[in-house]
Length: 419
Image (cartoon, rainbow, N blue to C red; front, side):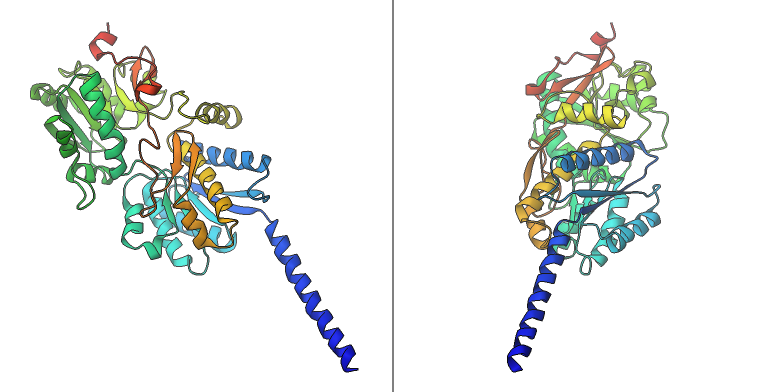
């Protein structure tokens, strides 16, 4: 009798073990859930959503991640922070996603990161901000790594990276291509430009100081507001300053008005370089009535084979999803592939701490270079790992003038292009 009870007990234990293994196997074949949220009435978020869908479709067609398919859950924040917080909770607590991607302005990313930090101990997950510029997200990681280690910022235009990407590139362009030694700087009055105007203590100097270190003389500085429509007086002051080039750290002002007024001012023959915004997009030619000719800007929307992924990404995004590769789309796409590689390096998704460590080490071929994250602060690897070509508007289209390995045309002075 005792022997029979012993055998029965062993049988129950074996059945229980088999059941647990079966559950584990079933779980290991379930889709990996990833959430994407953005303001789906904004072109940048629409483009980022399409890029996320394209990356997931490509991965699933290639067998998924470690044999598991990916399920993308898309949500619309409508550009509202309270809705962003509500959606973030839903994705993490109800949908149980492994990662949340926020393809929207940095304020949304910060709001998501704060609620994510509250949820992380009970609901371990990863957070990516793929469009938001500025420094708030990586500052959270820097100042309290233990609390915010789950957060990663992929949009590389944070102030520190700006200095590495565009100030260094601009210094080369200004000195070697334009032959200018004196620089006028125009800032827009936003949070992202504050570190460039004032510097970040113990992190990075003012932009003017970087230019001085690089052998340039800053002869004029001013700050314009977002609602400003008249810039003529600014250009007249620049013309009187003796500047040889105008460096515009802007991206959100009314660039159409800014460019038109430049083209009609006393400074019209002084080259203008913008850091972002409308001028880096194909519609700029029509919206400025061709006045954008001669303008230089960092743009990710020009077809240059920076890597084997660059042109296929642009072509497929338009062909399959009918949207252009607006800023933030490539960083969303690249983040998903970097995330995939980190999961594979970590051997799966069972250990979130191991996954974070792999994200801090991963490097993967991307649309504009190499995707990866700085291990201490979790922002995207800067130039020369990740590249933003500097283009000049010539004869109705953008032409890459720098870096030289991707050059499509020589720099031409604005007055020559107008002839």
